[in-house]
Amino acid sequence: MGNTDKIIRFVIAIIVGILFFTGTISGTLGILLLVLAGVFVLTSLVSFCPLYTIFGIRTCPIDKKD
Image 1 (tube, rainbow, N blue to C red):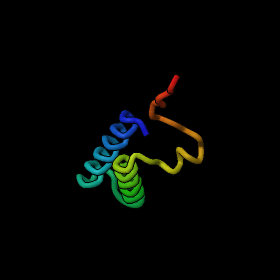
Image 2: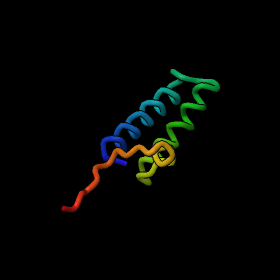
Image 3: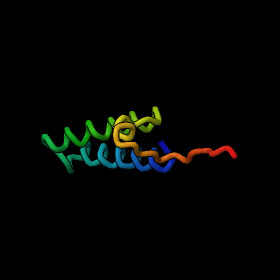
Image 4: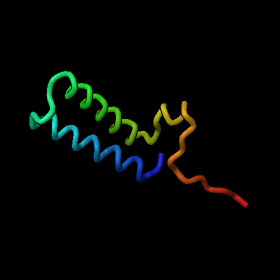
C-alpha cells in the first residue's frame, strides 16, 4: 500500500469519526461507517489491504532492478 493511499484512508477515518461523535451521522449507517473507518485505520497501520490482493491492485511503487 502506497503512502498516499494510507494518508487518504486515515483522513477519511478521522472525518467519519468526527462526524459520528458529533452526531452528524448516526444510527445503523453511522455505526457501519464507524466500523469501516476502523478498518481503514487498521489497514493503514499494517500497510496491507486484503481486497487489494484479491483484485490485484497495487498502490505502492515497485522498485525494478536493471
